[in-house]
Image (tube, rainbow, N blue to C red; front, top):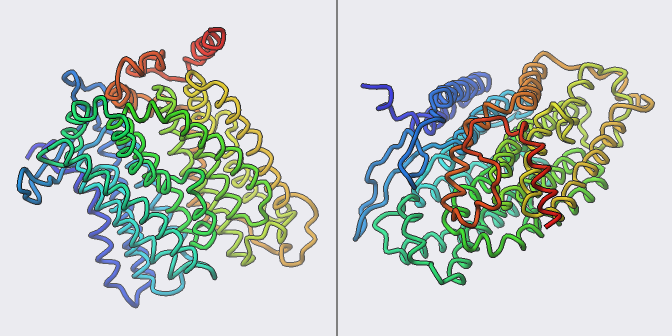
Length: 535
């Protein structure tokens, strides 16, 4: 069997499920269940790294052909006409989402020492969640995609509902209801697309090719179909005003559960994979309204974050603000903006995941997330303080960190099409400095005047093992974003061209198909932006 004949995508999706079943059998062996889960996530990460290393970003395609590799297609469910296919494929965007997911789950397992009951069930749900998320990123059939999308709800329900905080039931039900409403609307849109096109399958390439002929001249219909997808993705992202489940879910979930919620970039991915290619006219028509939502979310969430007294809720609102900037970049419909959005999605998972690990470490020492319960910790936890500072500075987009690499590309791209909205969204960097550094100051600096804090241990070996790799990734992506951009270029170009070359060409003066470091294009971006303003 040739290497290309191996079903790598199916393997990477279902490997966690295999280990999940094994972990579930270890009812009275907490350490064994944890070890099985950790090994499972590591093996899955290794497979995803092999996929990444063998992804051919320079591969040529026929005109109009989607840039998907390692395709797996099998007839699954017979219909009166055609069938529902098991169709998987990977391009540059989904490749990075897969690597991000498999990269963060070993840390989720590693920091789950606060789980003190039903260990085998907990690790079963965590690994099942990984399978569901990977399935979402690799599915190219809308029915298969929807099944994985809905499957994610089940482990999230149990992880928060069983192992969460005092208000876990309220947070779980709220999260479940919000997501279910969006999912039902998306299902209606999926069925609408299928029956309107008269397609013989739910395969994304087939539907994408058939939609222009069916929806041409029917903008209202296209907008309604787009609305079902947009609401589902917007709730999951989450974007303002569909974000209200986030503070409760983040705050009540266990540390591992909070990191899982941060890693769920499925909604933002959905905007790129489905909304832009399938409904380009609706996207262009509604983009100004979406940009308004994005800008409001950036400013509103930043202001609310500035007033938080709970560490986890502050991080939650910070996430909503950052996601607003990502939404702005995606719907700027520029190559550099979308590429920056993907990089920021990866960076946000790494940086916010590190912040939740740090917050969980503080909670394990003091049993409190209240910022007021701390102060002066730098005197007793110097090593911990350095790690906390690095994660904080990446969150505020300090140059040479991953947060800056994504932020500068997103703002450069969105400035080309929405300069004034981008100018307002840029204030997010200012606000993030306000609430993140103020939080850091209150926790780490000042007098060590609380007796409970005077004997707190510094970073443990386990915490170092969890945090040092994330810190390394923060600097690696921040200093060397070019390898990531090279994987993205052709896929982003394909997505934009499928949304209508005539409409996107003017908004994409940067040739994203060229495998170059987009940071080197900053002078050209600034010149183009100034020319746009003069016009």
